[in-house]
Each structure stands twice: as C-alpha cells, then as structure tokens.
Length: 377
Image (cartoon, rainbow, N blue to C red):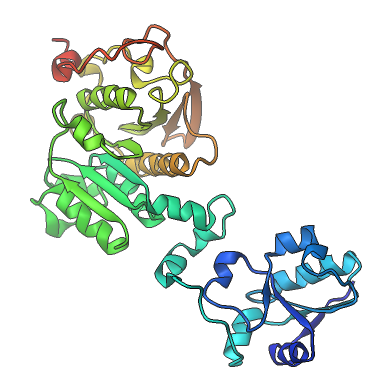
C-alpha cells in the first residue's frame, strides 16, 4: 500500500485547515519540543489502539517522527486498519526545524544535558527515562581502582551512575598503565583514587566520585558499604574478597565478583544476603582460600593487559542490571573467560546449606583476621 509523503510546509498548511498532526516519537524524544499543535503519541501505542487517539477513520491524519522513517511505518499500519486519509511528513521533525516552522517549548524542567548524554539509553524500553533516573540516584561501592576497577568505573560513570564510592589505598605505578586505564603517565606517584576521580569527572561531571584513599578492613567495611546499592569487587587479594563477601551477606548487599589470572578471568554475582538459601555467596564457592603459592597475584604471575578490561566491563554490566532490575544476573552462575581460546563457559553454583556465613537462619559469626585466614595462619 503506497504511503503519501508530504513536506513539513505542506503539513503545516494542511494542519491549519484542520488536519490532525501526530508526533509518533517516544516521550523522551518529544520532551525538547515538537511541531506546534501536534498530538504526541508513541508509535507503538498508536498502532496497538489507534481509535483511542484517532476515533474517526476518515479524518485527515499527518504523522511525523524525527526523520520520517517511523512515521511512514506508522502510516502504513493505520492504512491497514482502515484509516483512509493518512500521510507521513518527509524529513520529520529535523526538516520541520530546518524549515523554520514553529515548535513547542521544551517541557518544564527539561534537562538538555541528561537527554543528550543518555539518549541511547533513553531509546531502550528496558531503561527509558525512569531507568536512567534510577541509575542517576544509585550509589555503588567499587573496591579497587586498578585493572578491574578501571573499566568498571569508566562504564559505570559513562552510564550515569549517580555516585561511585571508590576505595583504594595504592598509588599509580608505571607498571599499572598496561591495564589500569583510569591512570596516565603524568599521574605516576599520586593516589589511584585521586587519579580515577579526575578521569571519571572529566568523562561525566554528573557522576559524583567519592574518593576514599583507604585500605578496606573489618573496621571500615561497614562504613564504606553504608548507603550503597551494589558492591563491586575489584580487589586483587583473597583477604579483601572474603571480607567483602561477609559484609555483603551481613548487610544484604549484592556483590559483583571479578578475578583475573594470566589469560583467564571469572565473574559472578553473590547475592546471598538478600536471597538466603537461594543464592550462594563467595564462601559457598571457596570455603577455604587456596594456598598462597597456588594463587599468585598479577605482579608475580603476570596478566594479559586487556583481560581485566573484559572482566571489568562484565562487572559493570551486572551492576547496572542489578540497579535496573532487568535481565538475568550472574546470580548462582560463575562465568569463565579464556582469552587465548576466546571462549566463555559457565558453571552453575548452588548455595551451601552449611555455609558458615550465609546458611539460612545462621547468625553472622563476626569478622575474622582475614589475612591470617588466607595465609593458613
């Protein structure tokens, strides 16, 4: 069925003679303004129940979007449903503006930076304006501003997470630059959290960076977790991993886990604090830490520079999903990545009914000397 396309000027003229102009863009796209006197109805809503908005099938209806593509598709759908006088505005709102035709004022409180910066998120029905605002009010704790923390923080800030609390007591070293992309040559010797804050604030000034130049311990862990929605483990040692796990179980915080070794990495979500008996914690996977000689750190064993980037981005993805409540998180699943084979595989994880920390009904046993526990002492 052939679609009639008309210019914006012709649409304006027909509108003045009684034609109904309908802007079929999404709400967030119409917020900066739309063709004057147009009726705003998202394409999906219009096509699913056109009579709710256009009760007369013989009325002259003009459809407009941003460029003319969606309005032409919507016009086709209306013709198929019995509307007889339908046209699409060629070039859409972009051409309407270029031709100098009148537009409505932006909605009250319209935030140009918000809509421009997050426009690609706003187009996703799973996120939209409400989801983006949820991200902007979210708070995350990221432990470690190194190999895993760098890509995770980059993408969380870019995505619009409102507050990132970044904890790390280390300083930038030249050997870090092969993988820790938050930092630069000029910042060697300064605190990693200070370097990270400068990079992230330059990327997205809307994101608040709380730089905490402290090593996480049993004494400060609950203070660092206070008020956050998600905890991201970017640490490189077992004592911190066990400490974070125990605190997250106690306080009911989801923990996004990541680890790298040479050419391989792992990621998971440990959420036993909110799902006792249904989701495992880190101790369910590793009741006892491996001996130190079996788990050398990056400085001892080396690591492919891009590997933390892959795992850190997976962690950022899981953190965003948890805040938005979309998709299926890696809860109860351990994702393995082999960079040399370029292969992912998955291991199912079950909660340990006898776990010393997360077993249903078990009282929190208290924090321990994690360094001694992980050294076999």
